[in-house]
Image 1 (cartoon, rainbow, N blue to C red):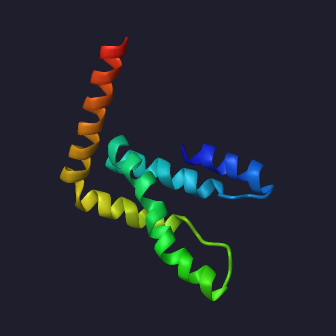
Image 2: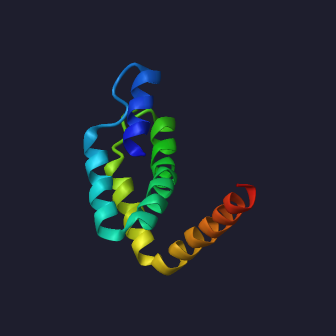
Length: 104
Protein backbone atom coordinates (compact mmCIF):
# COMPACT_ATOMS: atom_id res chain seq x y z
CA UNK A 1 0.00 0.00 0.00
CA UNK A 2 2.67 2.47 0.97
CA UNK A 3 4.71 1.70 -2.14
CA UNK A 4 1.66 2.48 -4.29
CA UNK A 5 1.26 5.81 -2.46
CA UNK A 6 4.90 6.64 -3.17
CA UNK A 7 4.63 5.78 -6.86
CA UNK A 8 1.37 7.74 -7.20
CA UNK A 9 2.93 10.74 -5.48
CA UNK A 10 5.91 10.58 -7.80
CA UNK A 11 3.63 10.58 -10.83
CA UNK A 12 1.49 13.45 -9.54
CA UNK A 13 4.21 15.73 -8.14
CA UNK A 14 6.94 14.81 -10.67
CA UNK A 15 9.46 14.21 -7.86
CA UNK A 16 10.01 11.63 -5.13
CA UNK A 17 7.10 11.84 -2.71
CA UNK A 18 8.18 8.99 -0.47
CA UNK A 19 11.40 7.07 -0.13
CA UNK A 20 11.73 3.30 -0.21
CA UNK A 21 12.80 3.35 3.44
CA UNK A 22 9.16 3.87 4.42
CA UNK A 23 8.20 0.75 2.49
CA UNK A 24 10.88 -1.23 4.32
CA UNK A 25 9.77 0.21 7.67
CA UNK A 26 6.16 -0.82 7.02
CA UNK A 27 7.40 -4.29 6.11
CA UNK A 28 9.17 -4.56 9.45
CA UNK A 29 6.16 -3.15 11.28
CA UNK A 30 3.86 -5.63 9.54
CA UNK A 31 6.19 -8.51 10.36
CA UNK A 32 6.43 -7.47 14.00
CA UNK A 33 2.83 -6.54 14.90
CA UNK A 34 0.83 -8.37 12.22
CA UNK A 35 -1.12 -7.32 9.17
CA UNK A 36 -4.20 -5.97 10.97
CA UNK A 37 -2.22 -3.56 13.12
CA UNK A 38 -0.02 -2.66 10.15
CA UNK A 39 -3.12 -1.55 8.24
CA UNK A 40 -4.23 0.49 11.26
CA UNK A 41 -0.73 1.99 11.44
CA UNK A 42 -0.90 2.94 7.76
CA UNK A 43 -4.14 4.86 8.31
CA UNK A 44 -3.18 6.40 11.67
CA UNK A 45 0.29 7.73 10.77
CA UNK A 46 -0.90 10.56 8.47
CA UNK A 47 -2.90 12.08 11.34
CA UNK A 48 0.25 12.32 13.44
CA UNK A 49 2.02 13.78 10.41
CA UNK A 50 -0.70 16.44 10.12
CA UNK A 51 -0.27 17.45 13.77
CA UNK A 52 3.41 18.09 13.06
CA UNK A 53 3.19 19.27 9.47
CA UNK A 54 0.49 21.95 9.59
CA UNK A 55 2.31 24.17 12.14
CA UNK A 56 5.56 23.60 10.25
CA UNK A 57 4.02 24.77 6.99
CA UNK A 58 2.40 27.77 8.69
CA UNK A 59 5.76 28.82 10.15
CA UNK A 60 7.28 28.09 6.70
CA UNK A 61 10.26 26.19 8.00
CA UNK A 62 10.21 23.72 5.18
CA UNK A 63 8.08 21.46 3.08
CA UNK A 64 9.91 18.15 3.53
CA UNK A 65 8.49 16.15 6.42
CA UNK A 66 9.99 12.77 7.35
CA UNK A 67 7.29 10.09 7.45
CA UNK A 68 9.18 7.32 9.26
CA UNK A 69 8.83 8.77 12.78
CA UNK A 70 5.07 9.03 12.33
CA UNK A 71 4.87 5.43 11.13
CA UNK A 72 6.83 4.37 14.20
CA UNK A 73 4.64 6.42 16.55
CA UNK A 74 1.45 5.05 14.98
CA UNK A 75 2.79 1.49 15.25
CA UNK A 76 3.59 2.06 18.93
CA UNK A 77 0.11 3.47 19.61
CA UNK A 78 -1.50 0.55 17.75
CA UNK A 79 0.62 -1.89 19.73
CA UNK A 80 -0.45 -0.31 23.02
CA UNK A 81 -4.14 -0.34 22.04
CA UNK A 82 -3.92 -3.69 20.30
CA UNK A 83 -7.16 -5.19 21.66
CA UNK A 84 -9.29 -2.20 20.68
CA UNK A 85 -7.66 -1.76 17.28
CA UNK A 86 -7.95 -5.43 16.30
CA UNK A 87 -11.56 -5.46 17.53
CA UNK A 88 -12.45 -2.50 15.31
CA UNK A 89 -10.76 -4.09 12.29
CA UNK A 90 -12.49 -7.42 12.95
CA UNK A 91 -15.88 -5.67 13.10
CA UNK A 92 -15.26 -3.97 9.74
CA UNK A 93 -14.09 -7.24 8.21
CA UNK A 94 -17.23 -9.02 9.46
CA UNK A 95 -19.46 -6.38 7.89
CA UNK A 96 -17.64 -6.43 4.55
CA UNK A 97 -17.48 -10.23 4.39
CA UNK A 98 -21.19 -10.48 5.19
CA UNK A 99 -21.99 -7.90 2.49
CA UNK A 100 -19.78 -9.66 -0.01
CA UNK A 101 -21.36 -13.06 0.68
CA UNK A 102 -24.86 -11.56 0.53
CA UNK A 103 -24.24 -9.83 -2.81
CA UNK A 104 -22.43 -12.70 -4.51
